[in-house]
Image (cartoon, rainbow, N blue to C red; front, side, top):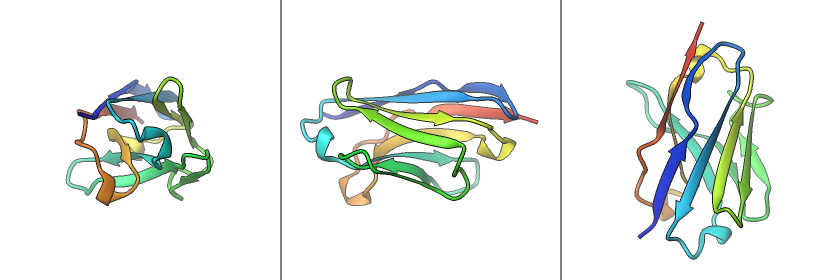
Length: 117
């Protein structure tokens, strides 16, 4: 059974930085998957903010371009999200999962990011 464990969230002032990490266990196909970081704020749908292919190509949403960077470490089985220049509108619960809905693993608990103004 695949398990996703997100960590690294917290409370930070606007302009600050956080680094989120997602540990993926139980998947023998992880290294072939395009992985993504998602976020969901109250009353809104979960949205994909960044993704990374098995080859390391990345894509980020326009709302976080130039501020967020996604990376992965196949040996450690982790997918990280470096978030800089945080804004109050980045406040959300952040999750990782595959970037294709047809391949979703069971969602983890997520990690709360709160940015104060």
